[in-house]
Image 1 (cartoon, one colour):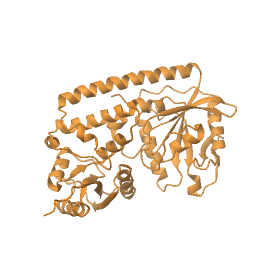
Image 2 (cartoon, helix red, strand yellow):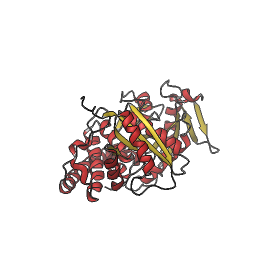
Image 3 (cartoon, rainbow, N blue to C red):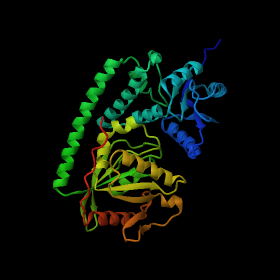
Image 4 (spheres, helix red, strand yellow):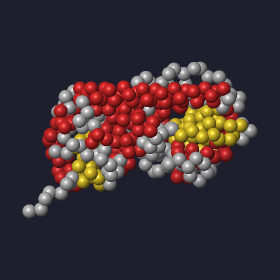
Length: 377
């Protein structure tokens, strides 16, 4: 008699429920991109419509049976919900399905754990993971003694967190916060040095996979890692650029945003996002080829407001115009102020216009109202 095959860690069942949200279809498609970014090669979708979540399983009992059949057909190690599950719902689903169950927050944390490269990025991800785990422990997350594998090609962060008790987590969180606070102070010193030299600073912001890093490399020749996947870049990278008749400026590439970005993750990445809060100009990169570009831009603006960067001057940069079939150029409003710049970071079309637009924003340099401190930990 042959042994039963081990569950495939690169296979998962994706669950999305429609509660009447007009963005449901886009959200379900985004979930596919998220799991593929996490290294899940094979997946099956289970969808449904409900008026409200089921208190025990989030989905109904019939849908649980459908998920079980799909998981068995794929021999999937994981079931991933495109929603936030309560600890009780997650525990009940794992007992019923006999497989690891992740909600949207845990999926994003998994991706961030895979993507973090610098020591600061790893500290920030670990802090977010531990804070999320702490909420499960406080609410009686008793099944964590069982080994939990990760997604895709990695073992996942769970392996190192299984036996952490609340006291150890609290102590480790305190250490991580102190280390990140030290890094925050170092960034503050660097910003003061730039301010004394009167160096204009701009930060690239935008929805994940809008092409920020490709644009950053095109403007700075930095050679930063770029890929056609969600959250390819986590760690802030800053480089000096030269503007036509405008002297030097500092350009920073930052982590991309996404709908329903977990609040704890935003808080953990405070040190990184402070580069955005203290910039003189935000280059809001929009994927011009995306049908959901307007909603994605609104999601970015919402997060910018949450971190205290809503009052910073913005320049919309419509990227990927070669895919969208648009022409490079500059669009101004009725007052002559530049409203949008149309570029292709991949082909280089419109980059000269963008440099000119940044120069125009930098000269004359206007004093802006001090912005509040970003999210506190």
